[in-house]
Image 1 (spheres, rainbow, N blue to C red):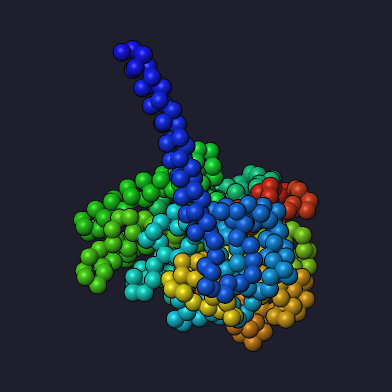
Image 2 (spheres, rainbow, N blue to C red):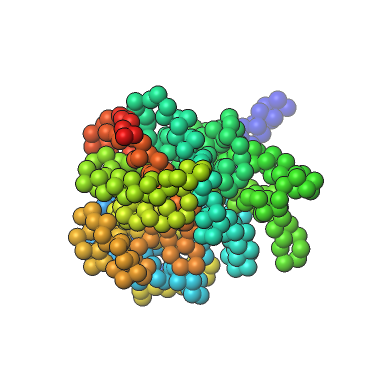
Length: 496
């Protein structure tokens, strides 16, 4: 009997081995087939030339390496030279068609029925949230954008200039008093974040604001990366940071909602209050998740663009004595114009005097755009330039495609702020994309402009500075910042 049982066990084990092998082989084949099906181009489409790289990873690693080395333009130009101005690739887990040039920009930004939505790649969407304004379309997008624009439209910003100037002056004094050196990128991040939190969200200065800034910085780094949710990865850290942000904002939204219901806060006092009281067509309010996703989007859109531009401006003013002299002279005239005012704060009128300073900023954004480009998504099959773009593919526009095109900007490698003396005639439509273009142009463009000009005015009229690291390079993660944070020596200007 024992012999029989032993024999049966051995034969059972021998029978199981080929079965397990067969199952494993089948699973591997199915997985390989699904990967091939997902990442292979459709056979019935005329797709642009290009390379999709490795499954899922695509060309993400080489793209991000180019970003960190500030060689993204070269990365794009090498593919244009090989494949033409329209080419395919795979980035951040998505198949992508890259469009360059004015025609491509017009196709994406004109607002026509081109089959394109502003949906982001997986990594970006996970950080911003599925209800982000950048993910919305149609009446939903119009509803949320309208609520946000109530605080970002020019007339609202005009009323806030003196208040913004007060926050900037207070923060600069607090951070620079008694110091002879400072890391400018960190300083600008901190102050612009506090301006955003104070004016747009009604948040008081404090420890919570500083913790939010750290988490937003971490979250943004994960937006343009391989979306691997694995321990130790940039993406996992970004998701964890987003979780902490959501927890803090949820508490803030609940407290603000209670104050509105008690009549202690005006329903239109700031963006949080506006989104809480916003009603859809069916009379229903936005969910807490929808409000939080859009608060995160507003912070990232309004804060980081200003911080990047300030870093570029401060760096350039330290290097270009002629430009620095002209900017200082203009800002001295602005300071004279505000003399005699009781509160000593700038107003909209003085901001409008800073024309040369803003042209310098515009030229810096042409040469080093804060947002190199962005993704949109096809919701149906569409086509451009004789090529098919299948449903579900990402479409990526890139600012350097026109910013550095000698057919659009003469001697594009030369720094020349005079290009923007009369931009309506000197810059062709859909050629300058510092803040996007068309119906979905950045809603925070005016807010960013005023914030940057107020910061430069208060800095350059009180200090001059010198770089502590000569030829400090620019890196993108994904925004362009001086690699070492731009440490500078500070010198107070004479008040006489």
